[in-house]
Length: 163
Image (cartoon, rainbow, N blue to C red; front, side, top):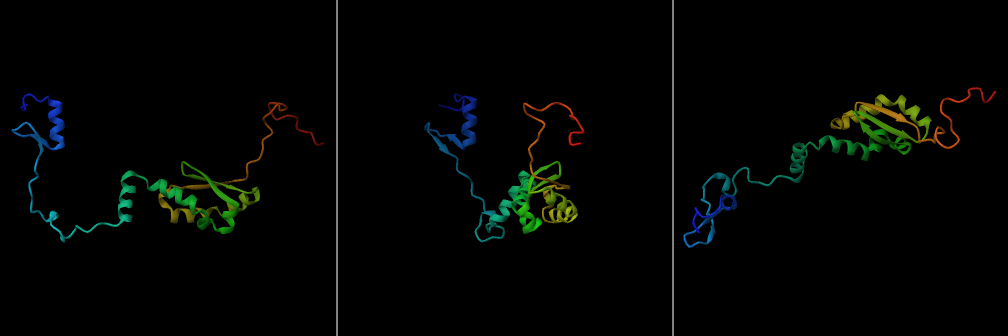
């Protein structure tokens, strides 16, 4: 089988694989030419292996994972940012458009943490600048709503019920 008889798709595949036809009809691997470049010589500068941390750092920057990893570190290390006592009574819930929402055990904790908002936001921005946190919102616990169900009516209802 000569080069003229081989279809173009197969010839392209063989060329990419580094194969070329021999005179006897068998396919053989092309031999690479040896270069005496410095990069191929042992014990030359630049041949030492890099550290794993450097490789992961390059990988995270190349794929744009740094902001997501910073947000996950913030959630994971919330106790270090807010303090042990505060972290026992609050936890980060969401981060949407630069707004970090913190859910607290009670409305009293939510109100007191609003007074500490500047300090907590400063801690977050200095420790995790790539997280993209611009503001912090503190909310109380989830409470049941009385607006739904069989016995609810639309609107505000009667106003003077406890008179």
